Length: 181
Image (cartoon, rainbow, N blue to C red; front, side, top):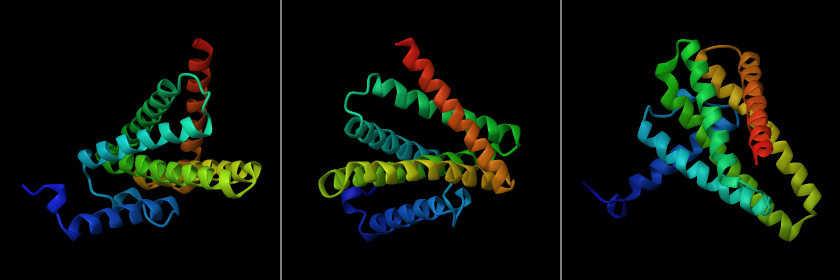
């Protein structure tokens, strides 16, 4: 078995293709079916997504209490909800690709948010940067809706409605954790 150090240009090319696919999904040009069906890939992307989201949240909201609990709880609730949606729609066989697409676009979003925040705090007005960040966060709802609509083979409006329910579940979970503290 070759080590990652010796995998040659194929590793770089594979990573480029994967990142481009996540970007295309984020722009609603491709769906989760364009990703490989791999639970290992999902695990790697999920861990990377969680780590980047923790770093982003720590930088953007440095005084945020229970950061780790909230981020992990919100990820768990979202993944459980979307898995249930796939199960109810009879599309559970698409869960690896769908969850990878959700985690990958979330990872991409958080990398962009972190970059904007860091660059914006140096070069631009903080309020303008927070406005752009808000727009990107709002864009994540149609992105999640698009991913789910592709996975369950329904129109985009149904997918966006399901993503909006996920957003409400996340908000409810966040409020519950905050109240319990």
